[in-house]
Amino acid sequence: MDLLFEKYRNRLLVTDTTFIRSSMDAIHWEYRLYGIKGARGVGKTTIMLQYLKENHLNDETALYVSLDNLWFAKNSLTSLTDHFVKRGGKHLFLDEVHKYPGWAQEIKNLYDDYPGLHIVFTGSSLLEILNSRADLSRRAIVYEMQGLSFREFLGMTTGKNFSIYSIDDILNNHIEISGDILGKIKPLQHFEKYLQYGYYPFFNEVKALYHQRIEELVNMILEIELPNLRGVENSHIPKIRKLIRIIAESVPFIPNISKLSERAGISRVTLLSYLVYLQEARLINSIYRDAEGITRLQKPDKIYMENTNIMYALSPGTLQKGTLRETFLINQLKYNNKVEYVEQGDLLLDERYTLEIGGKNKKNKQISSLPDAYIVADNIEFGTHNRIPLWLFGFLY
Image (cartoon, rainbow, N blue to C red; front, top):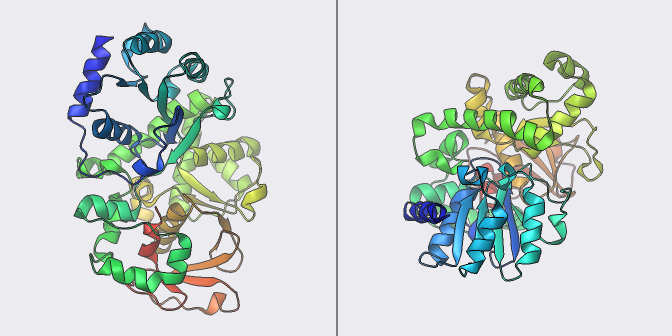
Protein backbone atom coordinates (compact mmCIF):
# COMPACT_ATOMS: atom_id res chain seq x y z
CA MET A 1 0.00 0.00 0.00
CA ASP A 2 2.93 2.37 0.58
CA LEU A 3 3.58 2.05 -3.14
CA LEU A 4 0.18 3.67 -3.85
CA PHE A 5 1.05 6.63 -1.61
CA GLU A 6 4.39 6.98 -3.40
CA LYS A 7 2.74 6.93 -6.82
CA TYR A 8 0.22 9.53 -5.65
CA ARG A 9 2.95 11.87 -4.40
CA ASN A 10 4.87 11.52 -7.65
CA ARG A 11 1.73 12.31 -9.66
CA LEU A 12 1.21 15.50 -7.64
CA LEU A 13 4.77 16.63 -8.28
CA VAL A 14 4.26 16.61 -12.06
CA THR A 15 0.70 17.97 -12.03
CA ASP A 16 0.60 21.37 -13.76
CA THR A 17 -1.62 23.98 -12.10
CA THR A 18 -0.80 26.84 -14.49
CA PHE A 19 -4.31 26.66 -15.95
CA ILE A 20 -7.22 25.36 -13.88
CA ARG A 21 -10.60 24.96 -15.50
CA SER A 22 -13.65 26.75 -14.14
CA SER A 23 -15.12 23.30 -13.53
CA MET A 24 -13.02 23.31 -10.36
CA ASP A 25 -15.42 25.81 -8.80
CA ALA A 26 -18.53 23.96 -10.00
CA ILE A 27 -17.59 20.72 -8.24
CA HIS A 28 -18.76 20.27 -4.65
CA TRP A 29 -15.54 18.77 -3.32
CA GLU A 30 -16.75 19.01 0.27
CA TYR A 31 -19.68 16.64 -0.30
CA ARG A 32 -19.24 13.22 1.30
CA LEU A 33 -19.73 11.26 -1.93
CA TYR A 34 -19.16 13.02 -5.22
CA GLY A 35 -18.71 11.66 -8.73
CA ILE A 36 -17.18 13.23 -11.84
CA LYS A 37 -18.03 11.50 -15.08
CA GLY A 38 -17.23 12.31 -18.66
CA ALA A 39 -15.78 11.07 -21.92
CA ARG A 40 -12.20 9.88 -22.17
CA GLY A 41 -9.66 12.66 -22.52
CA VAL A 42 -11.71 15.61 -21.19
CA GLY A 43 -9.51 16.06 -18.10
CA LYS A 44 -11.23 14.30 -15.18
CA THR A 45 -7.98 12.96 -13.72
CA THR A 46 -6.20 16.29 -14.18
CA ILE A 47 -8.81 18.34 -12.36
CA MET A 48 -8.82 15.85 -9.47
CA LEU A 49 -5.02 16.02 -9.11
CA GLN A 50 -5.02 19.80 -9.46
CA TYR A 51 -7.53 20.06 -6.63
CA LEU A 52 -5.37 17.81 -4.46
CA LYS A 53 -2.22 19.80 -5.24
CA GLU A 54 -3.97 23.08 -4.45
CA ASN A 55 -5.68 21.89 -1.27
CA HIS A 56 -3.91 18.78 0.11
CA LEU A 57 -0.32 18.99 -1.13
CA ASN A 58 1.33 18.08 2.17
CA ASP A 59 -1.72 16.52 3.76
CA GLU A 60 -1.50 12.83 4.64
CA THR A 61 -5.25 12.69 5.20
CA ALA A 62 -5.79 12.65 1.40
CA LEU A 63 -5.03 9.89 -1.10
CA TYR A 64 -5.54 9.49 -4.86
CA VAL A 65 -5.59 6.04 -6.50
CA SER A 66 -6.57 4.83 -9.93
CA LEU A 67 -8.64 1.66 -9.74
CA ASP A 68 -7.04 0.27 -12.88
CA ASN A 69 -3.76 -0.05 -10.94
CA LEU A 70 -2.38 -3.60 -10.88
CA TRP A 71 -2.30 -3.38 -7.07
CA PHE A 72 -6.05 -4.05 -7.12
CA ALA A 73 -5.57 -7.37 -8.90
CA LYS A 74 -4.69 -8.88 -5.50
CA ASN A 75 -6.10 -6.29 -3.10
CA SER A 76 -9.52 -4.81 -2.50
CA LEU A 77 -10.68 -1.22 -2.30
CA THR A 78 -12.24 -2.03 1.06
CA SER A 79 -8.93 -3.19 2.59
CA LEU A 80 -7.17 -0.10 1.22
CA THR A 81 -9.82 2.18 2.67
CA ASP A 82 -9.80 0.48 6.06
CA HIS A 83 -6.02 0.86 6.32
CA PHE A 84 -6.19 4.46 5.07
CA VAL A 85 -8.86 5.53 7.55
CA LYS A 86 -7.05 3.88 10.47
CA ARG A 87 -3.99 5.98 9.57
CA GLY A 88 -6.08 9.17 9.77
CA GLY A 89 -7.31 9.28 6.16
CA LYS A 90 -10.30 11.54 5.47
CA HIS A 91 -10.31 12.29 1.73
CA LEU A 92 -10.20 9.40 -0.76
CA PHE A 93 -10.03 10.17 -4.50
CA LEU A 94 -10.80 7.20 -6.77
CA ASP A 95 -10.06 7.40 -10.49
CA GLU A 96 -11.47 5.13 -13.24
CA VAL A 97 -13.99 3.38 -10.95
CA HIS A 98 -15.70 1.68 -13.90
CA LYS A 99 -12.61 -0.53 -14.27
CA TYR A 100 -13.10 -2.04 -10.82
CA PRO A 101 -15.62 -4.93 -10.64
CA GLY A 102 -18.46 -4.23 -8.24
CA TRP A 103 -17.33 -0.64 -7.71
CA ALA A 104 -20.80 0.75 -6.94
CA GLN A 105 -21.63 -1.71 -4.16
CA GLU A 106 -18.20 -1.36 -2.60
CA ILE A 107 -18.30 2.45 -2.63
CA LYS A 108 -21.81 2.35 -1.12
CA ASN A 109 -20.46 0.16 1.69
CA LEU A 110 -17.53 2.51 2.27
CA TYR A 111 -19.89 5.47 2.45
CA ASP A 112 -22.05 3.70 5.03
CA ASP A 113 -19.22 2.15 7.07
CA TYR A 114 -16.90 5.18 7.31
CA PRO A 115 -19.08 8.24 8.07
CA GLY A 116 -16.03 10.50 8.49
CA LEU A 117 -14.67 9.70 5.01
CA HIS A 118 -15.14 11.94 1.96
CA ILE A 119 -15.00 10.08 -1.37
CA VAL A 120 -14.61 11.63 -4.83
CA PHE A 121 -14.66 9.27 -7.82
CA THR A 122 -14.35 9.58 -11.59
CA GLY A 123 -15.65 7.35 -14.34
CA SER A 124 -16.72 7.01 -17.94
CA SER A 125 -19.59 9.05 -19.36
CA LEU A 126 -21.29 5.65 -19.67
CA LEU A 127 -21.20 5.26 -15.90
CA GLU A 128 -24.55 4.21 -14.43
CA ILE A 129 -25.40 5.76 -11.08
CA LEU A 130 -29.17 5.65 -11.06
CA ASN A 131 -29.37 2.07 -12.32
CA SER A 132 -26.51 0.52 -10.41
CA ARG A 133 -27.43 -2.32 -8.07
CA ALA A 134 -26.06 -0.35 -5.15
CA ASP A 135 -28.30 2.63 -6.01
CA LEU A 136 -25.74 5.33 -5.35
CA SER A 137 -28.24 7.93 -6.58
CA ARG A 138 -29.49 8.44 -3.00
CA ARG A 139 -25.95 9.05 -1.76
CA ALA A 140 -23.84 10.51 -4.56
CA ILE A 141 -23.94 13.80 -6.41
CA VAL A 142 -22.56 13.42 -9.93
CA TYR A 143 -21.08 16.17 -12.07
CA GLU A 144 -20.65 15.63 -15.82
CA MET A 145 -17.50 17.10 -17.33
CA GLN A 146 -17.19 18.25 -20.92
CA GLY A 147 -14.17 19.03 -23.07
CA LEU A 148 -12.74 22.54 -23.27
CA SER A 149 -15.01 25.36 -24.34
CA PHE A 150 -13.64 27.93 -26.77
CA ARG A 151 -13.32 30.26 -23.77
CA GLU A 152 -11.19 27.74 -21.88
CA PHE A 153 -9.06 27.04 -24.95
CA LEU A 154 -8.30 30.76 -25.20
CA GLY A 155 -7.42 30.80 -21.52
CA MET A 156 -5.00 27.90 -21.92
CA THR A 157 -3.31 29.25 -25.04
CA THR A 158 -3.13 32.96 -24.23
CA GLY A 159 -2.97 33.06 -20.42
CA LYS A 160 -5.83 35.58 -20.35
CA ASN A 161 -8.96 35.26 -18.20
CA PHE A 162 -12.41 35.42 -19.77
CA SER A 163 -15.82 35.44 -18.10
CA ILE A 164 -18.57 32.85 -18.55
CA TYR A 165 -21.85 34.19 -19.98
CA SER A 166 -25.33 32.67 -19.81
CA ILE A 167 -27.35 32.12 -22.96
CA ASP A 168 -29.58 35.06 -21.97
CA ASP A 169 -26.50 37.28 -21.62
CA ILE A 170 -25.33 36.36 -25.12
CA LEU A 171 -28.74 36.74 -26.79
CA ASN A 172 -29.51 40.08 -25.16
CA ASN A 173 -26.11 41.73 -24.66
CA HIS A 174 -23.89 40.23 -27.36
CA ILE A 175 -22.63 43.56 -28.73
CA GLU A 176 -21.36 44.72 -25.34
CA ILE A 177 -19.90 41.28 -24.50
CA SER A 178 -18.15 41.03 -27.87
CA GLY A 179 -16.61 44.44 -27.24
CA ASP A 180 -15.26 43.36 -23.86
CA ILE A 181 -13.67 40.22 -25.34
CA LEU A 182 -12.29 41.98 -28.40
CA GLY A 183 -10.59 44.44 -26.05
CA LYS A 184 -8.43 41.51 -24.89
CA ILE A 185 -8.07 39.30 -27.96
CA LYS A 186 -9.02 38.68 -31.59
CA PRO A 187 -11.25 35.58 -31.29
CA LEU A 188 -11.31 34.77 -35.00
CA GLN A 189 -7.51 34.49 -34.94
CA HIS A 190 -7.92 31.41 -32.72
CA PHE A 191 -11.32 29.99 -33.67
CA GLU A 192 -10.21 27.73 -36.54
CA LYS A 193 -7.46 26.28 -34.33
CA TYR A 194 -10.03 25.43 -31.66
CA LEU A 195 -12.27 23.66 -34.18
CA GLN A 196 -9.32 21.50 -35.23
CA TYR A 197 -7.53 20.73 -31.97
CA GLY A 198 -8.89 22.68 -29.00
CA TYR A 199 -11.52 20.46 -27.38
CA TYR A 200 -9.39 17.90 -25.51
CA PRO A 201 -6.93 19.38 -22.97
CA PHE A 202 -4.08 17.18 -24.18
CA PHE A 203 -3.81 19.27 -27.39
CA ASN A 204 -0.76 21.07 -25.99
CA GLU A 205 1.27 17.90 -25.43
CA VAL A 206 2.32 16.56 -28.86
CA LYS A 207 0.22 18.44 -31.39
CA ALA A 208 1.35 16.30 -34.34
CA LEU A 209 -0.18 13.22 -32.67
CA TYR A 210 -3.35 14.94 -31.47
CA HIS A 211 -5.79 13.49 -33.99
CA GLN A 212 -4.18 10.07 -33.69
CA ARG A 213 -4.84 10.20 -29.94
CA ILE A 214 -8.49 11.02 -30.62
CA GLU A 215 -8.75 7.95 -32.85
CA GLU A 216 -7.24 5.90 -30.03
CA LEU A 217 -9.81 7.32 -27.60
CA VAL A 218 -12.62 6.36 -29.96
CA ASN A 219 -11.23 2.84 -30.30
CA MET A 220 -10.92 2.43 -26.52
CA ILE A 221 -14.54 3.50 -26.06
CA LEU A 222 -15.66 1.04 -28.72
CA GLU A 223 -13.45 -1.89 -27.73
CA ILE A 224 -13.44 -1.56 -23.94
CA GLU A 225 -16.19 0.66 -22.58
CA LEU A 226 -19.12 -0.39 -24.77
CA PRO A 227 -18.59 -4.14 -24.14
CA ASN A 228 -17.90 -3.69 -20.41
CA LEU A 229 -20.46 -1.01 -19.58
CA ARG A 230 -23.21 -1.64 -22.14
CA GLY A 231 -22.78 -5.34 -22.85
CA VAL A 232 -22.14 -4.85 -26.56
CA GLU A 233 -20.90 -8.05 -28.19
CA ASN A 234 -17.28 -7.86 -29.35
CA SER A 235 -18.34 -9.20 -32.75
CA HIS A 236 -20.46 -6.05 -33.23
CA ILE A 237 -17.62 -3.58 -32.60
CA PRO A 238 -16.46 -3.52 -36.27
CA LYS A 239 -20.06 -2.77 -37.27
CA ILE A 240 -20.28 0.11 -34.79
CA ARG A 241 -16.94 1.42 -36.05
CA LYS A 242 -18.35 1.32 -39.58
CA LEU A 243 -21.47 3.11 -38.34
CA ILE A 244 -19.37 5.93 -36.87
CA ARG A 245 -17.44 6.30 -40.12
CA ILE A 246 -20.71 6.53 -42.06
CA ILE A 247 -21.99 9.22 -39.72
CA ALA A 248 -18.68 11.12 -39.68
CA GLU A 249 -18.60 11.27 -43.47
CA SER A 250 -22.24 12.35 -43.76
CA VAL A 251 -22.93 14.81 -40.94
CA PRO A 252 -25.20 16.60 -40.42
CA PHE A 253 -26.80 13.23 -40.90
CA ILE A 254 -30.55 12.84 -41.42
CA PRO A 255 -30.80 9.12 -40.70
CA ASN A 256 -32.73 6.69 -42.81
CA ILE A 257 -32.68 3.89 -40.25
CA SER A 258 -33.57 1.13 -42.70
CA LYS A 259 -30.80 2.04 -45.14
CA LEU A 260 -28.32 2.74 -42.35
CA SER A 261 -28.96 -0.62 -40.67
CA GLU A 262 -28.48 -2.32 -44.03
CA ARG A 263 -25.18 -0.53 -44.71
CA ALA A 264 -23.85 -1.21 -41.22
CA GLY A 265 -25.14 -4.80 -41.10
CA ILE A 266 -27.13 -4.17 -37.90
CA SER A 267 -30.84 -4.72 -37.21
CA ARG A 268 -33.05 -1.65 -36.83
CA VAL A 269 -33.68 -2.12 -33.07
CA THR A 270 -29.99 -2.83 -32.37
CA LEU A 271 -28.94 0.16 -34.46
CA LEU A 272 -31.19 2.53 -32.48
CA SER A 273 -29.75 1.18 -29.23
CA TYR A 274 -26.20 1.66 -30.52
CA LEU A 275 -26.97 5.28 -31.47
CA VAL A 276 -28.05 5.87 -27.86
CA TYR A 277 -24.83 4.28 -26.60
CA LEU A 278 -22.71 6.43 -28.92
CA GLN A 279 -24.42 9.54 -27.63
CA GLU A 280 -23.94 8.44 -24.02
CA ALA A 281 -20.25 7.82 -24.80
CA ARG A 282 -20.01 11.38 -26.17
CA LEU A 283 -19.07 10.32 -29.68
CA ILE A 284 -22.18 11.70 -31.40
CA ASN A 285 -24.92 14.24 -30.71
CA SER A 286 -28.43 13.17 -31.71
CA ILE A 287 -31.02 15.92 -32.16
CA TYR A 288 -34.73 15.21 -31.76
CA ARG A 289 -37.85 17.18 -32.56
CA ASP A 290 -39.13 16.71 -29.01
CA ALA A 291 -36.21 16.00 -26.68
CA GLU A 292 -38.51 15.73 -23.66
CA GLY A 293 -40.43 12.66 -24.73
CA ILE A 294 -37.79 10.61 -26.55
CA THR A 295 -37.44 6.87 -26.07
CA ARG A 296 -34.45 4.61 -26.68
CA LEU A 297 -36.11 3.30 -29.84
CA GLN A 298 -36.92 6.70 -31.37
CA LYS A 299 -35.12 7.73 -34.54
CA PRO A 300 -33.07 10.95 -34.21
CA ASP A 301 -34.02 13.74 -36.61
CA LYS A 302 -30.37 14.69 -37.13
CA ILE A 303 -27.04 13.26 -36.02
CA TYR A 304 -23.77 15.16 -35.59
CA MET A 305 -20.37 14.14 -34.32
CA GLU A 306 -19.97 15.18 -30.68
CA ASN A 307 -17.31 17.82 -31.39
CA THR A 308 -15.41 19.21 -34.35
CA ASN A 309 -12.07 17.71 -33.26
CA ILE A 310 -13.49 14.20 -33.74
CA MET A 311 -14.57 15.24 -37.23
CA TYR A 312 -11.03 16.33 -38.11
CA ALA A 313 -9.66 13.05 -36.71
CA LEU A 314 -12.08 10.68 -38.44
CA SER A 315 -13.04 12.37 -41.72
CA PRO A 316 -10.69 15.27 -42.54
CA GLY A 317 -11.25 14.91 -46.28
CA THR A 318 -15.03 15.35 -46.18
CA LEU A 319 -15.41 18.36 -43.85
CA GLN A 320 -17.84 21.10 -44.81
CA LYS A 321 -17.84 24.57 -43.27
CA GLY A 322 -21.57 24.49 -42.51
CA THR A 323 -21.28 21.18 -40.70
CA LEU A 324 -18.38 22.44 -38.57
CA ARG A 325 -20.42 25.49 -37.56
CA GLU A 326 -23.46 23.46 -36.52
CA THR A 327 -21.38 20.83 -34.71
CA PHE A 328 -19.53 23.50 -32.72
CA LEU A 329 -22.73 25.31 -31.76
CA ILE A 330 -24.60 22.17 -30.68
CA ASN A 331 -21.61 20.96 -28.67
CA GLN A 332 -21.29 24.23 -26.74
CA LEU A 333 -25.05 24.66 -26.23
CA LYS A 334 -25.94 21.13 -25.10
CA TYR A 335 -23.76 21.30 -22.02
CA ASN A 336 -26.20 23.52 -20.13
CA ASN A 337 -29.12 24.09 -22.50
CA LYS A 338 -31.82 22.12 -24.27
CA VAL A 339 -31.32 21.78 -28.04
CA GLU A 340 -34.00 20.39 -30.36
CA TYR A 341 -34.60 19.89 -34.07
CA VAL A 342 -36.92 22.42 -35.70
CA GLU A 343 -38.46 22.59 -39.18
CA GLN A 344 -37.99 26.35 -39.66
CA GLY A 345 -34.44 27.42 -38.80
CA ASP A 346 -31.66 25.09 -37.71
CA LEU A 347 -32.15 24.63 -33.94
CA LEU A 348 -34.71 25.28 -31.23
CA LEU A 349 -33.02 26.37 -28.01
CA ASP A 350 -34.66 25.94 -24.59
CA GLU A 351 -38.08 25.48 -26.27
CA ARG A 352 -38.12 29.18 -27.16
CA TYR A 353 -35.31 30.54 -29.31
CA THR A 354 -34.89 29.66 -32.98
CA LEU A 355 -31.32 29.74 -34.27
CA GLU A 356 -30.31 29.92 -37.93
CA ILE A 357 -26.60 29.21 -38.53
CA GLY A 358 -24.52 30.44 -41.44
CA GLY A 359 -21.64 32.50 -42.77
CA LYS A 360 -21.10 36.24 -42.39
CA ASN A 361 -23.55 37.02 -45.22
CA LYS A 362 -26.36 34.83 -43.86
CA LYS A 363 -29.72 36.58 -44.39
CA ASN A 364 -32.68 36.80 -42.03
CA LYS A 365 -35.18 35.59 -44.63
CA GLN A 366 -35.86 32.06 -43.32
CA ILE A 367 -36.69 33.15 -39.77
CA SER A 368 -37.99 36.70 -40.32
CA SER A 369 -41.56 35.71 -39.38
CA LEU A 370 -40.58 33.97 -36.13
CA PRO A 371 -40.44 35.53 -32.66
CA ASP A 372 -37.25 35.10 -30.63
CA ALA A 373 -35.25 34.14 -33.71
CA TYR A 374 -31.53 34.77 -34.18
CA ILE A 375 -28.89 34.49 -36.88
CA VAL A 376 -25.68 32.84 -35.64
CA ALA A 377 -23.05 34.03 -38.10
CA ASP A 378 -19.49 32.85 -38.63
CA ASN A 379 -16.52 35.11 -39.50
CA ILE A 380 -17.87 38.25 -37.84
CA GLU A 381 -16.43 39.97 -34.77
CA PHE A 382 -19.53 41.97 -33.81
CA GLY A 383 -23.20 41.26 -34.28
CA THR A 384 -26.16 43.58 -34.78
CA HIS A 385 -29.69 43.25 -33.37
CA ASN A 386 -30.56 39.53 -33.70
CA ARG A 387 -27.32 38.66 -35.51
CA ILE A 388 -24.73 37.12 -33.15
CA PRO A 389 -21.13 35.94 -33.79
CA LEU A 390 -20.79 32.14 -33.79
CA TRP A 391 -17.57 32.21 -31.73
CA LEU A 392 -19.35 33.98 -28.86
CA PHE A 393 -21.31 30.81 -28.04
CA GLY A 394 -18.00 29.32 -26.97
CA PHE A 395 -18.19 31.40 -23.77
CA LEU A 396 -21.15 29.53 -22.23
CA TYR A 397 -18.99 27.47 -19.83
